[in-house]
Amino acid sequence: MKRLNYIISGLLSLSISLSSCDEFLNVEPSDARTIQYFYTNPKEAQQALMGVYNGLLPISSYYLMLSDVRSDDVWTGMPDDNEQNYMAFNAFRKQISQISTLEAAWTDYYEIIARANVLLEKIENLAFDEKIEGFSVKESFIAEARFLRAFAYFDLVRFFGRVPAVTSSQTVDEAMKTPQSEAKDIYENIIIPDLEYAINHMGDIAYGYNGNESASGRATKPAAQALLGRVYWTMAGFPLWDNSKKAPAMELLETVIDNANAGNKYWAKDGKEWKKIWISDNDNKYHIFEIQYAMQSGYGNPMIFSSLPKVSSSLSHVTMSGNKINSSKSLRNLYRENSSEIRFLPTIRKGESYFEKLFENIMKRDTLGFSKIDDQIVDRNSFPINYPLIRLEDVMLMYADLAGPTDKGVEMVNKIRVRAGLKELSASQKTTEAFKNCVLDERRRELAGEGIRWHDIVRSGNFTEYIKAAYILEGNEGISAAGNVQEGMYVYPIPDKQLLVNDGLYTQNEAYK
Image (cartoon, rainbow, N blue to C red; front, top):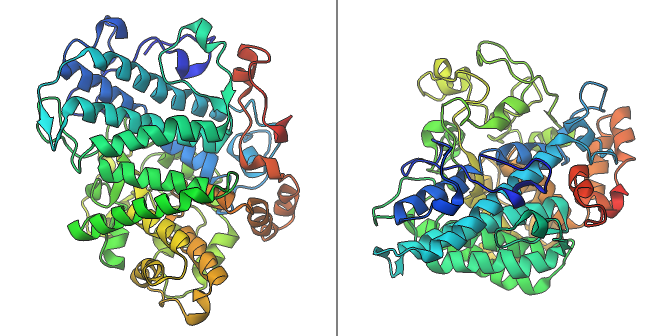
C-alpha cells in the first residue's frame, strides 16, 4: 500500500490493499493497478471490499491502548523513561499528543474511511446481476462499506471528539483544507445515515459477488442494528445527553436480542461454555461481529502480544512484550465480591494481575479440552483468536440500562448474572438508581478486557470519579496519577503530526492545550 507520508493520514491514500475473493486476511498488495484502474467487474469490487475489512486488523490494539488502558480496569504504574506510551495514557499525562499510538490510530481509522470512500465511488459504475433477499448484491456491498465507514467514524469521534468529516476521495489540496466537524454533526450526517442504509440493505447472511453465501466474518444486518443501537445509546449519554435517542436505541437493541433468541445464536448456555468463547476454534460463533484474525504471521491479533508481561514457556513459547498492563485492584475487588463468580479467573490470570481472557495459551487450551496449537504460532504477530466488536451480552446490558428495572430489563441482567454463578438481583437492587449501578457493574465484569469500559464510564458523565476512586486504591503512585485527571480528558488530543500538517487547520482539544 502506497502512502504520501507528508499529508493527513489515510484521508489521502492514493492506493489500497487488495485481498483475495475468499478471505480478506490473505492480502496481496497490487504493485501495478491503482484504484483508477481497479473496479472493472463485481469480482474486483468484492476484492476491494475485502480490502476495507482488512483495515480492521490493527484495531484491537487501539481498543487495548486507548480504551482498556485508559479505564479504571487497568493500572500500569507511573511512566518512566523506557515506557512512555501506554503508561502515559493510564496516568493521564497531558503531554501525550506526540505518542506514536495516537498517530497510528488516527491514520488507521482514516485508512478504513479512505478505502470505503473509494469503493463507494467506484462501485456506482458497475452492474451486478445477482439479487438476494429483495436487494442486489451491489447494494449489500455498499451497505458493508458504509457500515465499516460508520464504525471508523464512531471510534474516531469517541476517541478524538471533533475530527474531519470526509465522505469522498480527496486530492492532497482538498484534504489540506478540510477542517474538523462537530461530533454531533458526524453522528447525524455520516454515522447514522450509513448505518440506516446498512440495515435496509443487508441480510442475516453476507453474500459474494456471484450470489453465493459468504464465509463467516462479514457484517450482517444484526451487526448494523446492534452498532446503530450502540450509537444511539452513546448519544443519549455524555457529552451529548440526547434523550431523543433512547427510544430508537431500545427498539434496535430489542430487535437484535429477540432475533438472537429466536435463532438460538450468540449465547453460551452456561459458565462452562462461556469459558470456551475465548478459544479460536469458536471464532464467529458467539459474537455478532468480530475482527477476523488468522494463525499466520502478520495476520494474527496484535493486542495479544502487547497486553502481556513476560510469561512462562508453559503458557507460550513466544516472548511477550513485558508490558505492565495489569488489572486494577478496583476491578479485582469487584470480581471478589461474589465467591461463586466464574468469570474472574478466565479474565484475569490466577495468582497474577494481567488479563488472560484473549490469551489463548497452552494451559488454557489443554484445560478446556482443545488441541495444542502453540507450535503453529510462529511469532508475536500470529495469535489467531478473533477480537469481539459487538457481543450479545453488550447489547443485552445496553438495553437493560435504557429499560431500567422493568421485567425485561431485569431479565437481561439476571440471565447474564446467573450464567456467571451470581444470584438474581435482589429487591433492593431493582430501584432505579441501584439498578443502573448494577448494570454498569455487570458490564464491567462481563466485558472486561474488550475495549468497552472506558467508553462506558465516559458515557456516564462521571469518568473522573471512577478513575480517581480506582487509582487511590493503588497507593501513592495511583493518587499522583488521579491528580492528573481533568474533565476534558474524555477525549484524546489531536496528534501533533496532524496539527502540523497545515498550521491552524485543526484546533487542539481543550484539556491538552
